[in-house]
Length: 84
Image 1 (cartoon, rainbow, N blue to C red):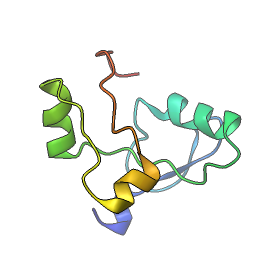
Image 2: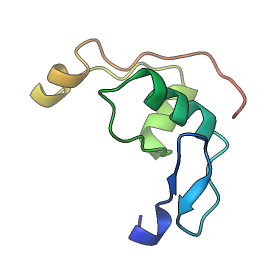
Image 3: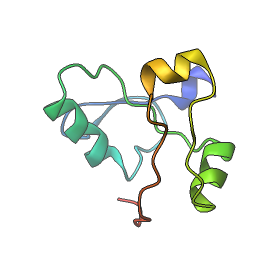
Image 4: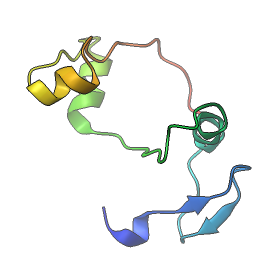
């Protein structure tokens, strides 16, 4: 990613900065901010390995000390939903 790939939206999902179009998931991202005052940023990404594990329905388990600190129970598999 490059700096110009980032966009900034307000809590209503209106683009404030950037040239790209906000994700169809922007309403979900802004809802997170509204209900979680401890969240400072949402990064929408499609990490190839995480995507592959999810598609294969293989849960990602913690393998490093840092992972145990932040996701001690691993990354659960959630049912598929259409974007948006």
